[in-house]
Image (cartoon, rainbow, N blue to C red):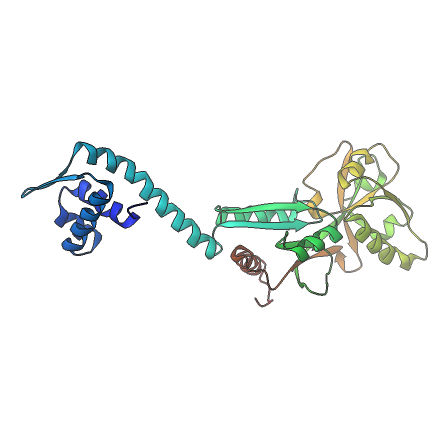
Length: 302
């Protein structure tokens, strides 16, 4: 291109103010600098943009058309610079977030909603998959951060505890335990548990084995080759219960209710951890980690 954005900015200011002197003052530069820049611009395009007189300047017929076309170019250039600066500071761009839990309710959903409100220019793409898939995505850089149910520690990744959420039992509305506000682990010893093979089913199965083993009986756990949503959808017509994290309770299923589970120490809780690569240079990731750290008063270092 035979001219630059600075020269266009000079010409637009001169056309708006009708004077090289006033245009130079508005741009905080010397009038001679602005005048030379506009003269170079006119020579580059091969036609005068302004008619000059002692009273000031006015655009020529060709100059008027040129200024109308130049204004959106300068606006677009300013937007591009602002966007690049914002991306460099983590205030724009993109973030790929992986998770193996539902976002219909709970802290993950609240975090995403709060982040979007505070950083509307940062596109967050969510990837729900099993833990192994998410860790592979972290390794290849396809995922910036994975938020996983339970404690996490994996070689090559930075993993930190983020928050805890309640565990609830999902059961039919006609189940005797549905009449209670709170269900204890001991109340569930004789139940048949229906869980998905996919995440977070295996983690919940392991938790059940640990929680109910103290009763001296091995829990009846059936693992299904189906999603969490499918298991809950058909639960209303089966004789069995399921265990869900609080993040799943925003979704409703026919004839299914949720009841909080308590143990000896109070509400049954499960933690959530964040995993990421320390060498990930995405500024949006660092800003997201700072956001989570402040929101939940966490103490990990960045």
